[in-house]
Image (cartoon, rainbow over all chains, first blue to last red; front, side):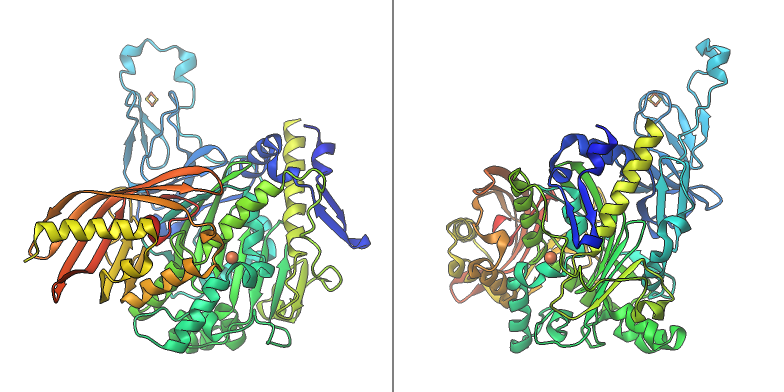
Length: 449
Length: 159
Ligand code: FES
Ligand SMILES: [Fe+2]
């Protein structure tokens, strides 16, 4: 596929009041292949959390695009990322989601590797009648050309690329706000939940930042928490959505907004007042002392953050970390975790977990209503009679360049801001996704040309 | 003591109620203060075990929480529940393990009418049962879902 065909899928003419993405970007297998090569396997992606590998010799496994990856901590405690494949014939080296081992012996022919990825043994080396050419060949695990730990969030790239600070850019402030909540950063609550949906990965990218769908898609959840609030039975989950109405049309003034960043990261946020439904409430005073009340309030606010292309941290009814793993143009795997400040009390943790289960789980009362819509859209993207999606238009006339006064609180300089009331439900933040999408495809296609 | 016949009847009735969407019948099988728990998996081998510090797929205490779930699928307001998926529960290897505890193996075949796809959730049930008057009721149910890679949705009636 030529670059001209790819770039033609995003019609970016905001000065004319127009932005659209062609449905083919969601359905075409050739586009999917380019996305795998140049976005997922061609630049920074999220790998996991440092808290998953706390001790020397710990590892976690994941996938970058189609490539199996292992992140290991060596004997000195230094983290690094490798392709999780034996350099002999390619058998996987580490087999569990998370595990530990000083020495990893390949199960196929017993080549062995240490936790720094170094080859330490080839079975029968002396009797192997190997050539000099073989003996001089590097047998170490393939190290990722770029790897970084930013505040406990681990990123890697299968190609040499910019420093992580450049990739995160101003969105790093959002990771800081998340990480500063805990005494010692964040951790994943035990219990990973994996589900798939029958739709393109970019549906998830958009939905996380989509305020417009909330009242349409989730009335069963919203009515239920309202009912629970009225009835005040014991042993029911109290949800922050019951106390807060930033999404309601009854609420006036600025209730939240959106930010977009050049690298494709976005934030959709809403004001959430402190109440006993906020797990962080127990630390509210301490955090205000340490960071100031304004920054503390940002920690309590709803923040649905996407770090392009595959990490989302949604802090709203509870707090979820999602790793988006595209399987094909029409199928996506979601690996999901409850993410929480380390050192949280039992009561706060329990409230966080209960809200998580009800809202975020595929066995809960909100997420399946989203993912079924993604599959519906995926079907509808077959519409060649109306190939241009009309979902990038809300907020076009009110979006502003640069930061707003709320970003200033964090010292954050997003490329664009949309402070707004409850009913604007900005869609222009998605523009940032597709600009980064195109730019990563372009860099990759030029590199491989 | 719980008897073999009443245990078999109860488990078959629960399966039947779910498959027939006889929600009132299903709810009537539970005690008011019942617990209903489907742990998540901590790692390859072990389900989560402490619902206060670890994630569950579903964790409720009290029948009113189950009533809420029933309300949601009946409400017509849940996109994932319209149309509802068709189910056929199979419960087997029913064994009375203790004075009030029963284990069983389950498979639930699920047909997604709209997308014309099929899936089968399977695993194990663990029950704690009590007599309320003459009736045997479910005081606690734990569902150990073996294939926890979930295609879009796994609602309570599919498990
Ligand atoms: S594939 Fe690993 S030793 Fe042969
Ligand atoms: Fe949603």
